Image 1 (cartoon, helix red, strand yellow):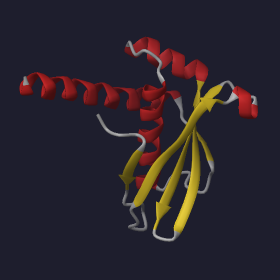
Image 2 (tube, rainbow, N blue to C red):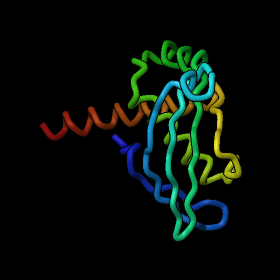
Image 3 (cartoon, rainbow, N blue to C red):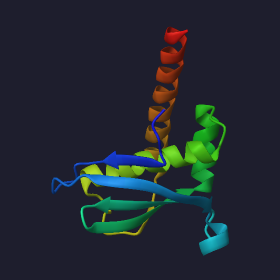
Length: 129
């Protein structure tokens, strides 16, 4: 399984690679009165450093979890946010924003990628046994 706590992403449209560290995950109702789960990351590329918060709106998040048969856990939410952040970096999309909200369509696509990783891990472990 990919590590959402410490990973590299890129290159961005300018050829930069970014090192990313997970900072925190919390319900946004407590920090900004939003019905969402926020995942904050610290990004570094050479001397440049940024902070990005990826917001997963709760109604859409619950629907994606239910439709995909996922248990809504901190790790699952963090992996969705990690995948979205990787997409933002490679595309350059929304890089000027500190807070980025993930659409239901993107959450669905990211959850499919998480399912693929999980299936690959199961195959790897079973093959090693």
